Length: 335
Image (cartoon, rainbow, N blue to C red):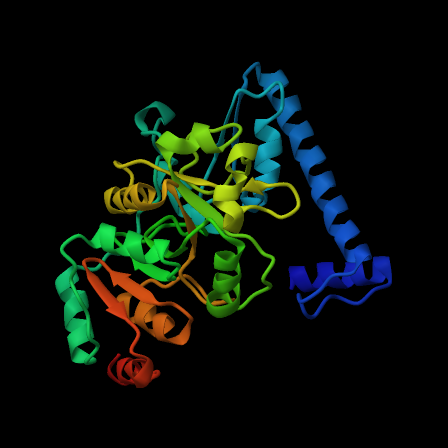
């Protein structure tokens, strides 16, 4: 109700109807978005700078839904009076569960948060049973990470389902769609055939934390994909699919081995093949749908989207064009 009232207020204030379709924007709409973002950045940076002065600190922590705005977080981090910024990765209402869990603990007793893999996970044998029940063919490569890296390097689009699901709004290598980050064609294929959205919209990169300084202007650990950074000019050609077209910025996720060992190995294998320690990463869901949680949901989306390969823990499923969508029908009938 609150959102609807707000939109109506803006319609009346500007004398323009709401935008019903996102296909195109006129200059007035672009100017409005730019101005709103600019005012937001100026307002929050001013609050942060006033607060650090008041409390005699150079450290800032951000939470709340507004802290999901990556460009805003970049502006706070770049303030000359701020040394360190921590953005709670589940910054929206879902993060209240974390706050409730920590509320009666001393801050000094809580370990620094380095990952959000707190959701459900599914054993390979359970996934194997689901596939066999639905007569879906699968393979179990001896070197899964190398095999998937080779497919990515060949331009294939991969659904990647591994370990405990991420908490929060970002896919961080547990429920992700992956692609080659090096070409605009890769970005366009994911937008057109997988995410079903405007082709200009960029995606985010997952890169080895050890390569962050080489690729990013302010390269450092950013494990939650909740901050923006500028890509070094010498590296933009390597990352065309994950650059914002206006300013060559990106929304990176850095990956260490201890955070997600298999995802780290996959990116390392891709680097060994291509020389680029980065993969394109977007959430494993269709447009306007939630991120997949279960193997059944992942299989349904795989057959309903333009993905080439589905990786479910140790198992790999590939499309049989002649079968069309019958595996989805079988899965729906038995789930």
